[in-house]
Amino acid sequence: MFPRHLPDHVATLLRHFPCVAVSGVRQCGKTTLLDSLSGDWQRFDMESVADRSQVLADPDLFLRLHPRRVIIDEAQLAPSLFSALRVAIDKDRGAKGRFILSGSSSPALAKNVAETLAGRIGLAELAPLSLAEAHRLPPAPLYALLAGRAAPEDVVAAASPRLDLRQVLEHWFQGGYPEPWSNGDPEFRRLWHRHYLDTYLMRDVGALFPNLNRDRYRQLIQLLCNLSGTILNNAEIARSLGVSEPTVRDWLGIAHGTYLWRHLPAWDRSPHKQLVRHPKGWLRDSGLMHRLLQVPDPDALATHPLAGRSWESYAGEQLLRGFAAGGIEVAPHHFRTRGGAEIDLVLTGDVGMLPVEIKLGSAVEPRALRALAEFVADQDCPLGLVVNNDEKPRLLAERIVSIPAAAL
Image 1: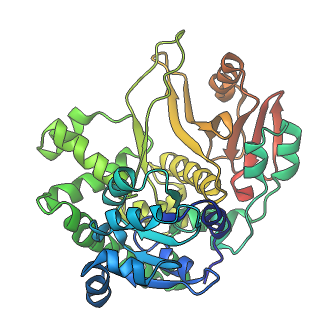
Image 2: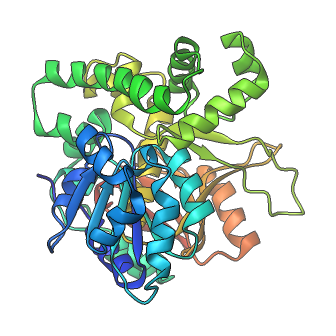
């Protein structure tokens, strides 16, 4: 077992809400996390015929017989349960921590939560293993400091590397799914990723969208490997796949909603610049991306033509996983002007406004920081962040800090 960083946040939500939903991509460890919760929780799996029959034969009666400490796994497969949950919760709104829902398919779960349980439920997302979790490290103090708008000098002091470069590169290559991490056999890892994608297409996407052209959708996923970290042009994608632009838009929504793809809208709050308003995105697990690209090992990855884009998505995803595990709410965007100025990631929310540049190398040339420095000045950001592979954190300018990825 790998110690996860999310349980503390889940425990906090249970103290404040009658119901908590834990969502995440299939095989990221949700069941293991829920089984580790303290207390006498009963778990009912909606993929089990027996459990499903017991719960759905009469949902109101089931919840009267099981009024508290109940986990419903893969809850998106039981839509009729949600209205019964609302009734059960409203009978005793003061009671907290009664129910936990989990689900692998966000669109169906999110729809039922939004329509039926709004105001009654706390939300948490479990991602595959972060760099720190894969190496059994506690959460980095960096995330709380960034959420607290700490001074640049304090961020530098807290961002010392906790791992060596080889460990970082191995996690970048391998990705974060727990099962391959628990088995070091390279052949098993290769086969696991291949069959994982087949399972994702058949079980999650196939069940939710039975009319989906799976062969074309699989081609889209393969294409997205080459488009990770780039501005998306739906018309070009549609021509490549031989489908319509609305179809591409729908399929990208499915990929994002099932946690395979991270949609990054353009940051567009500046009235003074000509901004590119098209979104970009990335595959959320670097290991799956590298298997689809047929990258054989970490050494080959370092010289791959798409290494820079892969690293951008990997490091950005590590940041977002760290914030999510700590219950720190951030919304990710990208920034680009028509003149070519670009910032990889602009985070808003509990961190205020935090622009982030991501570099694969260890050195940062001053000219590469021009767009970041201008953004920090224009938006009066307390901090601009550079994530790279340097040996130690550095204060690059008055409000610009570089931190090693090994500190995340």
